[in-house]
Image (tube, rainbow, N blue to C red; front, side, top):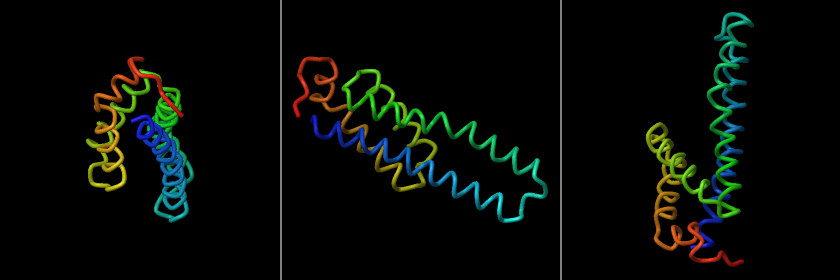
Length: 123
């Protein structure tokens, strides 16, 4: 189960990077498309979007890092992130698969024992 935890950790870190790329590309299209009438509206859309988006990406990175260190708080955080992904991004395949895989790994009895310190991580 140690390997699955590490895979989940790296998947959340990679998902954070992919999310950043999607956000930058999306904001670029919005701002360059000409659909936003003036610069102040474009700035409002960009800053509002980033204020909502950045904390989630930071949480993805923190959860991945914490899982790599086998911290119990990271297990709880990644479970919360997985549920949020299922609720808000259920129409997208990649986040849904990541969330389901995460929940399967995190609720496994071996994983729970690993994070409680009953089993030491190897490798």
